[in-house]
Length: 365
Image (tube, rainbow, N blue to C red; front, top):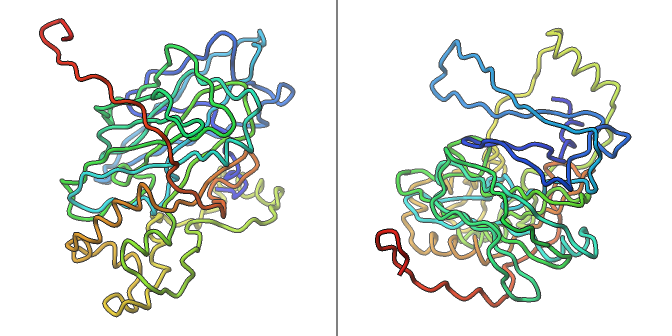
């Protein structure tokens, strides 16, 4: 698709399997129309998967958006949190695993208004390995009450959670999306990606008043991954950004013609299907000797790698407490870009554990 469409970063409507729709409170809504601060156009993105290559399947799905001409006091927005969609979300086979994504205090400090934003709903999103999800809220080195939690995550039931009471996220707050994953049924590693058999770990927060910040997440740094695997030297620098593209000028007139040609069938798209994990083929290891001249993809895709318990334990540790690359994206930011800022798990006093209660009949004891 035209490159400029990659700058379509501000989400208006989000849906996942099992969802029944989202309603905004009466005092907030999403603006429609350029004259009201809305977009000049909307792009609907759907993900299809047909692993058995069945023919003759016709899709008639769609969505229905209700609107009002009565302007509401606040413009609403959606903020995407969690682990960025990246092969750096790596889950070894045969494991109970924890993936996390940071929305750092650095990002919220620079991009949220003084009085913060008011959160009224959210969607927790993972794929087939997802078993439980939690969105943690940290302020002034103390953990606040859990925003959203699902201890029995089901890929087929991803409903929007409307909060009983709106809560405020202030500049300087940290938000941590945690995803408990189960790969015990797989004998190959799972990478972060768009396919159902790849993984995600994300939260979509519905809030007001709308700000320019649209993504606040992170991904494991290559430095942390190299440490876990015991890699000493490569043909690229450990700080290389995977999956990022350089900024460049866009010829909108040429892209418009391309889009019209694709739609009319006059032009064939030359884009080839690819997995994000293919980016790992581009990193060739020099040392240690056991990995010499092998690509990073070959190493992490080898069963021998995961037979080393020390490798598994190091990766488990750095996936949570290791160095991450921040993604702090604004409306004008290319969707695949990452910041140079490195962040780590914040120090904070956790919430006290809830009292253990047992269910007996219809009573809690």
